[in-house]
Length: 257
Image (cartoon, rainbow, N blue to C red; front, side, top):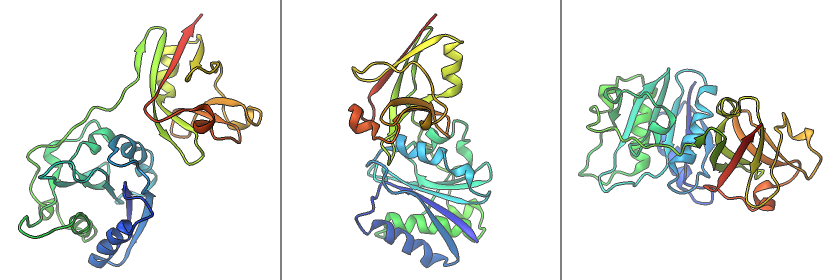
């Protein structure tokens, strides 16, 4: 059965997700639709890219990944479709996919064609693209190659020889705080030195735990999560609320001998 994943900023309190799924299934009923998240903050393509990057490879090759975040980014918005690493992707041409991949060939990206004279909805455009992929039609059936593939530069840590200033990019359901710093880069800059991780005006964290349970209940800890990102957490607690941390705030790490 063809798998289709959906990542949106539609939320779950309205009917928008159901309308999208209904449109997709009306074009082809024998699909299995998997929700990645519909709680992406409105228009936040960085957060959407974080979710897509960390999930799409866990699915079988041939899965269709739909992203519908910040859809009305321009008066003449367009949706695009492409194949990458054995997976299919559909979403707005607003830079989201350049944050997931840094090596997309623009000549492989096609516009999802639709009739501008008709009152087409986002859901209709997406469902048309899903149906094209699901029926095994070629990319030329989807539409022409895009005139311009939109790219964005993601938020990167600021690195010096003895300091990293990183950014909170996500706060999960448990209020664990995810920072845009991967373990490989941390260890490369650290080079075996001691360190202090500062967040707000709180006392710094000076060790990395392998799991939450290495800290006492209620204690603050830092670890690298399953996706390899630095995470600030409280064992059995809600770090974001209790520590006053918010998305887009800065975390500072100092290194010393």
